[in-house]
Length: 156
Image (cartoon, rainbow, N blue to C red; front, top):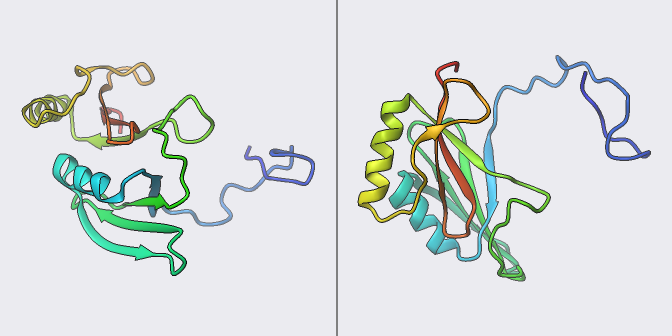
């Protein structure tokens, strides 16, 4: 059963037919960053994304950089707000907890661990995932402290 927003509060007990709406995938993720150029360069050099577009609001309140990765069917949008508070990401606040990128298998995680170490990127050791039996994960953080995971799930 799915829940819908209502005037009574964030979730009501009104069921929604899950087949209505035709959601077929995720188009993009949007992350707020402190320094758009620093973050875009990091995602390009560390994770292999490519810049595919930019946008600046006419009033200068926000700037965006759009990134793609050759093996993903989803885009990553980075946004810098001129009036942002400048603090780093904290997954204990309401909102995004982390973003997990799938990799082919455990061997690929080991390859990533070596690549990140060679590039001087701080990361966790490859470890068993606590959410899916048989899965493994490597955790790292971007320049804004956003937690990213590289995740190998043999059940996918």
